[in-house]
Image (cartoon, rainbow, N blue to C red; front, side, top):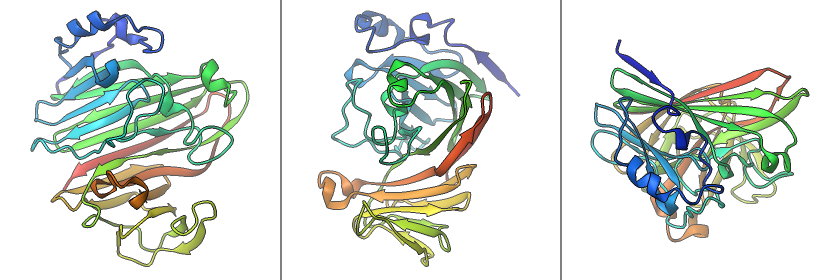
Length: 313
């Protein structure tokens, strides 16, 4: 097994701790870095809004791109060149507002609560921790730690590691949350994945029998129920949590692609489409999210790990 391991701080020292809010004067550095591709299939370049972006390229023809702001995967292309993820046309790349699309992080809060919607992880700068290559497939690990900004909302010390693994027909992630504080904390989390789709043809299999918290009729007061359908579709506004969901779902995106979504330790699933609330783009995507809706409690030095694999059938 061919394997190359490399910390990106060595070939790209300026990017290891790059923060776009503090380093607005590095445009020339990006111009040169964008021409360099590492032996691990990882390229660092300047993305939209001059934000740092990491490109992953497999020798088997698949590609992915990840913004350090928010640790957000914004593109996943398999060898046929089709992008399976969706970024909304109203997405803002300014290093202030979370990127709307791709795979944003919800941490340490999933929905509405005492802090900003979906927490702060999607609104902070992640750093590059490591990179490696296994048989032509790149692997990138990003890191997020607490800061005065995060502590203003959630006063705990933590480490989040987000490992992204690109293969010929799959994109896998591994999220590890570690309590580096001296006191216990609790959180919940999700990967708010936007899939490119034709909403009228998209469907999800594997949710029959799950307990549901359905926000379709009243987002502020979800109704409890049970999913009776073998195939769940998106006929209008959809905002539904599926508790104790299976570790394997199948998405037909209505565009000719079937995506198998597997997970380990993401106990729940969420389906969402805003329908007429986003007339400009609701027809072009659906969200199928792996989530942990109930609180995870971590003692000091304890870690929680959740994995996801998306693959083309």
